[in-house]
Length: 393
Image 1 (cartoon, rainbow, N blue to C red):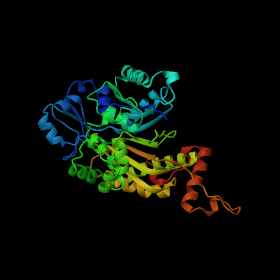
Image 2: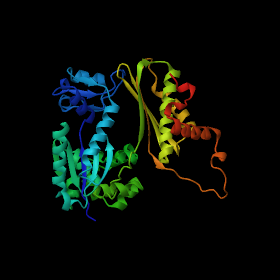
Image 3: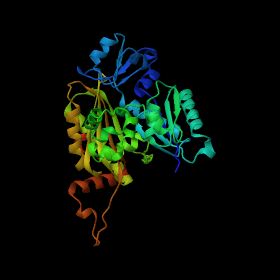
Image 4: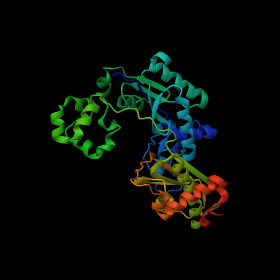
């Protein structure tokens, strides 16, 4: 089946957003990195900083030596997530199905939309113009028959705004000169081991890997050879996976005044967690990952997340996890300005039907029964009708 997959990327997305809000950052070298960490590493760089030799993954100290005029800005996860949601809203009229890669990057499946919108390359061009006119976001766009080739088509462009279309049948010719290190899926297949073995065999480009038979490649790499050989041939059957409606639930609070008291901050976090769990129960969904972000008074940010072994929507299950995340994030004795709790990797509730007619509440643990009673009271009398003492100011 012929598919039309578009990979849209806005390079250095957080720097682009910072420049939109602060005009003094435009046309000067900028790097994104934690500003209050002695050994902080650069996460993103502007084109001006890249021209001066600054690269992502480089230490901030070395980056300043290479580029004395470098402006280092801290990450702002709230602004980035909000902008990414705006980007998703912008592409909805163009693509019936899309998948988020990371903030500022998306896969769009335009298969079957040619009668409505014209050729996929023209649709992508209209979308790029709309993003530029509305927000000033310049993008790199790759169009191909699958996610792998469209991703590499966009990634290998020099700088935005640019667009590249790889026509059906020309995938292998496009991939042949590219280095094997560019494959985006290698991190899932023990990248360092595979790249080391390929280097030993002098297989440094995708073309050289494609020229080797699958049997020979399997003798060296084992089961990973099948996927790797397909990638080198430009074959990728993975679908564009649409995000479910509201893929995450987030609650945030700005502390006024800024706080440093552990118990008070934990109380505020418990209140945010209660609101998240109540909404999960209302939607009959469970979360598999809990994230916490803290922003200090000096604008430094710390973030931690925990993947749960099973889905849950109970405070009793998530409260210990949240306390551990807080201990991991709150390492600096600097006041906290803003706290953000996020539940994602949501999945529908799996219920076990009961053989006998017995009360569901009666067989639940006490902590679960308390949560359900609190939900009922708040639904009838308002959210502030009842609260745990630890969550009060």
